[in-house]
Length: 291
Image (cartoon, rainbow, N blue to C red; front, side, top):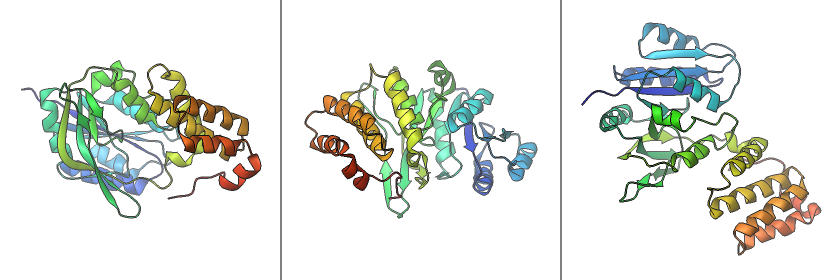
C-alpha cells in the first residue's frame, strides 16, 4: 500500500507567538509523510516560522502581509500543497500526539474524508467530546465542521470548489453542505485527538459578517437546505437586523422563519417584538456580549 502525504494548512493573522509555538510542536511530530504550509496575513513576518521554513523541508511559509480572509488563506495553502490529503488547522488550536500519526494511518486506505473526535474546551474550562457519525450505508449522518477534526482528499476538495472566499462566517458549514451532496468513503478515528478552544472574539461576534454570509448561503443553497436550517438562518437574520435597528428587514426574515416552522412560539414572539421598535431597542443590544 503506497504512502499518502498529508498537508497541514495553517492560516494566521497577528498571532505570531501562538503560531510560533504551534509550528514548533508540529515540526516535532512531522515526518516525511507530512508537510506544514503556513499562510500568514500579518503585517509583519513571523521570523521564527520563516527561519523554520528555511531549516526544515516540512515547513513552507507564505507571507501575504495583509488581511485577505481565512477562506482565501486556506485555498492558497491547498493550492501550494503537495499532499494527497489536506487538514486545515487554526493557529490557536491544539491536538494530542496521536493527531498526525492517526490521520496518516487512516488515509492509507484512500477514504475521501477522515474524522477524529474533538474535545471542545469552553472559556469556563468545561469540556465536551464531539463525534462525527456515519450510517450503516456509509452516508454521513453528523459532521464536525471545525477544521482540525477532519482530513479531506485534495482532489475531492478541489472538485467541489474549495472554500467559498466570499464567506467570512460559516465557511466550514457551507463547505460541508456541498460535501454532503456527494457519495463519500468516510473513515472515523474514535479518539478525541483534536482540541478546540472557542474564541471569545470569533466570527460569531461580527454580526455584519454573519448576516452577509448567511444571506449568501441561503441564496446559494436554497434548493437543498432543510426547512430546519432555513428557519434557523432566517431567525438569526431577524434578530441581527433588530440589533442593527433595521426592523423592516427583521420582520421579513422572521416571517420567513415562521413559514418554515409556523408552530415555533419563540419565533412568533420575536416577530411581535420587531413590530414594536421601542421594545426591541430595550431587549436587543447592538453588540453580542461574551457568554
